[in-house]
Image 1 (cartoon, helix red, strand yellow):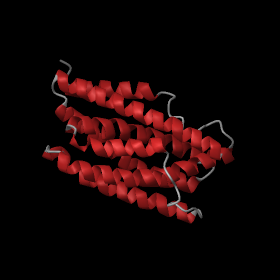
Image 2: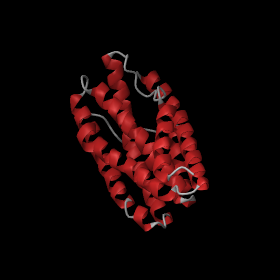
Image 3: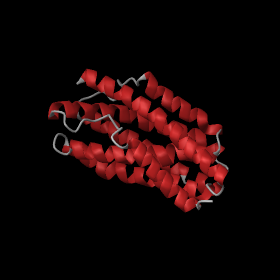
Image 4: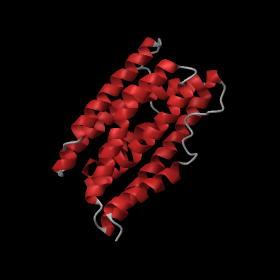
Length: 217
């Protein structure tokens, strides 16, 4: 059997391969004005994402019996709550109403599904959100920071210093959980399936996101 540590590394590589050229939310080749509108849309959506992340982590904590893992989650909840306020304040400073955003049905359904996953095994939950989801968030934020650098450097700095370091720590929670729990072939198969399920759902929501952003641009 593959060791848990080697499995987690291989699963990370599989997730990275899945996402190669699939994050369609931002267009590096777009004109600066279009790119700026795409970034603004990401920020408006980000306010919603962070608030829903608070909700789902709060829903999950009572359903994580493994103390070593459960004790890491309140810190993530606090981070997501702080990110919500950071993004909301930045949009207000830009003259936008952060509360006017209405999520796409596909995006709302994604978070509704994640909240409903609270009763699933810890291994599956953390494979989906912290391991697969937060790792992809880090990569997405790195892209946003690079593409915002010339059109909105203040927002780029907010993501670089106020959000991305926390997201990397959240992804590390997922790696730690899987390293602790993926100690049998069955557990490894369950983690791989959970990651695949999450990636497919997120990719579908990303495509819907880009279609809306393009209509606004």
